Length: 462
Image (tube, rainbow, N blue to C red):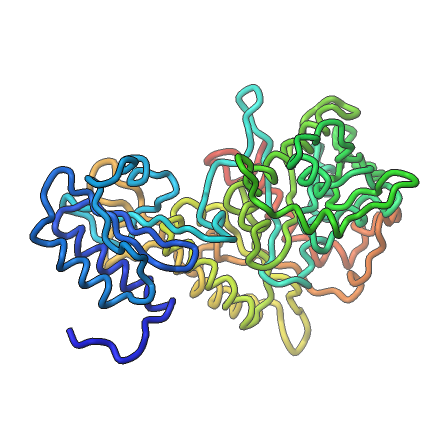
């Protein structure tokens, strides 16, 4: 191989490192590819069952030659020389190389260390069980702001409460709080918000916070209740509420307490607060209004805290580029199979005019959405069945473009100018107006069905 005349760049280093790791695994070694916070790679090879003496210099030279400057000072490390080899090689944070063909004794896993955003790849089951059941959590997320996500959250919350559910809305858009005032009004907020729990928990003083309030909304069903946990509380009379100073401190990982853990604890604290409320019932449904963008709040919300993630977007180049980057990260980290089936696309601000019909818009949206989501789907060879031949192997997940139950298939929210500037805490039941029902009708019906459906029950009966 001739030497490079230009330096390796970050985008090239990943595929090159993975290719080198696979070549070592093809020689029947278990390998772990570790990337540090600067993007540099170390290849750890498990040599405890067979010697690597004749290969060591060759592997080391290839790593240095092909990856510099994206290699560490020790680009090749042997498990036999490590005290904690098993803990590292079997780390739960290490993702398997799902794109490497199966077969043979070798294997590749990737351990990616980052400063921020690591939780996009840390997929886990959300929430604790109580008496064998667990509150259902739905995240509402948009890669870009301005797509009507918070208004949709309020609409969905009221509809679920009308159906008899105890509903809690948690405002996780910390930089731009909106769900709290929209649902409870500026004067109906509790003293504290999510940001207070994050700050106080960091110093062990989160007990006794007033995190939730029952809104003034009167659901059609007597058993329904609508609660909100705002990002920003109302504060205490006579004491300045230093929201910006608190916000500047919430994202830090502390010894023994990561930001992800503290955010999960905050959501669970809000759920417990509702349980201690008027009816003494725990929430049936929690709606998490996530902030936009590729941010740690969104990462934790989608990857760790929710059962269902509704992904909002308009049909624009920015939408598909953003979701494309996110899906590619999930695929490369090996987490796509763990997360893809809880996603569902929402087409927001869909036009329906004489010159631009809803059907034409949604056809184009669906095609682009499918193209984007294929990064998360399995590839099937022509004529290959969706299940693997080997007993116990997982089923392939490869829905068609026209599959209206697939993650990429959009749930529409129609554009309606009258929705702009809805008043906070409006008591005039604006959700009952004809233009609002027309805009949100299909979205509400579909979202409620997805939220209230039990395992294997797509019709959505509780």
